[in-house]
Length: 88
Image (cartoon, rainbow, N blue to C red; front, side, top):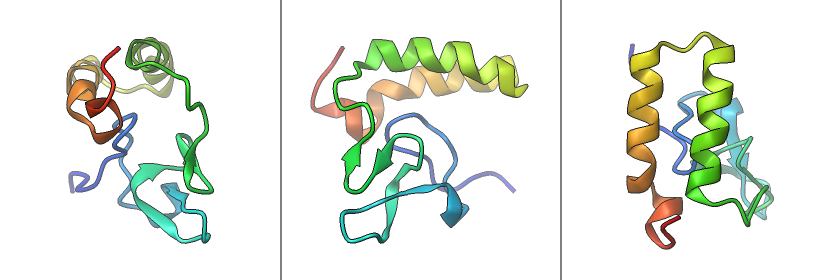
């Protein structure tokens, strides 16, 4: 089954509630993963979209993610909620 929910910062699938970040009240985020968002804030608040692209391009191959999925993820970044306000 294909993932239905994706982190609105990095594109990581967050269908599994354990992969989701947390809000200030400790509840699970419905928008962001645990690697991007904790306690109601981004872990790296000053990260630019270009820095995120570079990070994902380096990390995703190490996780044996297929090249076409990596390309799709990188192309989707500008449309995610986190990057709508500020373009890199």
